[in-house]
Length: 477
Image 1: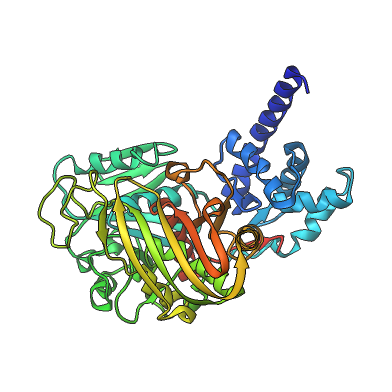
Image 2 (image 1 turned 90 degrees about the vertical axis):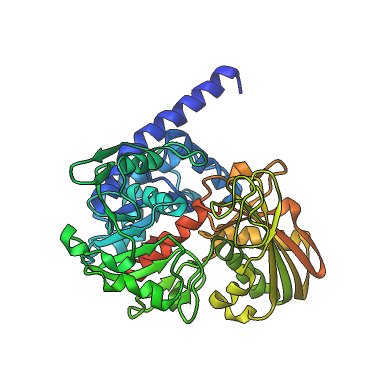
């Protein structure tokens, strides 16, 4: 291909991606239809991100999907009365072009494949969400909730609750939402309403409430009712402490973004969210590490069986540590986080059993905090019940990442050059690094990357939706 043809091909793809964007936006905002390409979300995607999502189709089916081949499916989708669902136009297009050579039957094909979502009853009322705490996870949850803003959105971010309230606090909170040293600038506009003590982000009006205890707030004063309160503070971890939220008028359920104590259910979305019942009013989304390793461990155990294992977490430092040496109640954590590797404990390995009881008592774990601000790695060493090899295990995990019910939790890379910063912003619970896999006989070691902030926050949103009964129909099945 000549240089001019390469440029012409790129121009064609770019223009096609640009033409897709307004259709994708209207489908979500007006009909609640989220479009993906083999699991890669196109909601609010840039033209480059749309092109890259199409390029990745080759990993799934061994051949590329051109934008000119998928664009007619977006057009046809925009003409159908499809509501409240997730539609994978990548899978629909690939399946169609295997048996067809022209566009004449696309609309009838789409109508048949998406019949379950056409005129789908939209009888689920939107639910209010309150973020109690606005630190690393709280602000990323806000970004994720705001990016889904629209008439059809069912998760409505209504308020954040903070301690403090000093002069200038509101603008500083808004500034932290606007700019992030790790995750970059907020994709949109953030304004401050000083008079009403609120932040307005992409049209989402977020009431800022100051309180020192979960039971001090009357949410009904702000027209908030039947709300899910997401506790991001990590201060209260048991039923008695988290139950204080339920004493506040307007709050009906609580989700903790940390491991819970006692009998509270620890949920890893994609693995055991089916354990959540309508009667569960306090639930935990477990930890970032538990979310990263549990789906991979489930996949391995389902095929090979795990006799026992050890999980070593190489974890980025967190706000719980000190910038420079200073007093800390925990062992070693008082030493400077940016200057040291710090051995510390983790309960993630034991916590796996709460989401995956079959592994109870089979795993040990430890952690090393390292001088990086985000993205961590779990090294999972296992003794299996059945023999395998590196190639066989990798092929199985690749297929799991592409085709299985865990495809939204597990990603897979065969890059020989990938490093931690490449995974910033990953929406997966964990990413299997196939080049580092070690397997021989009944012994296997897996290296799993995870964005311990953003990837975990995506998992939390899944638990929020499940708690509120906002499950989404995904098509094609």
